[in-house]
Image (cartoon, rainbow, N blue to C red; front, side, top):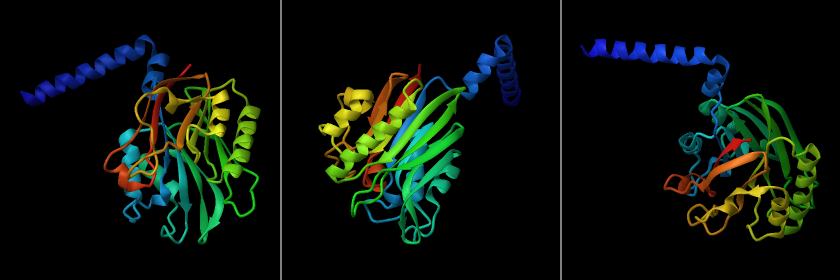
Length: 272
């Protein structure tokens, strides 16, 4: 009887699904393939080395999988360096999560490279990495730009990791805005990453003149660094007015406090 009941239930589900799709096949299939709400995440993974000194990409993957982002910015990603056992980190993380990816090689390091990565559940059909003008003795910084195709809409997604030096980050902020504004704001835009500045910084206010700082519109604590006892917010998600924010939060739990020295930020949104 139990098997018969399950069989009948299965048939009813299939029949009802076919009926719904037949009523309006194009719209219904789009809803199945493309949700109406999306999640974006930014996470400085500290090349997979946690606050306990252990290297583990699996911890990073588990944290990301639990949040199920559709688009993801990763900072401090290694590509075949000695310190991370020659792992192609962006590729490995993307493969585990079933996402497309692009990696920006910003700094040569230990026989490999170090930089930012963007991962997406949706097709990435454009990718470009713009290196900022490098100040003397400063680590090269850059802006990774992708265009993602979501339900036939173009979403411009930018990932970056700015300098810890205030003079360098000031120049980088101007370059960042110049690049993004040059592409225009007529389509949905998201800027994410570790900006190494607190929300009181003049440079953050400059970005917020053109874009919404999602972390500033909620009352709960949004501190992201250091992960063990977060006292400041330096990881951000900005959007333009083509994006409708629904919620934003910092993932602060036992796992995230160990996996990296930063806490990840997640935002849920709709596209106008």
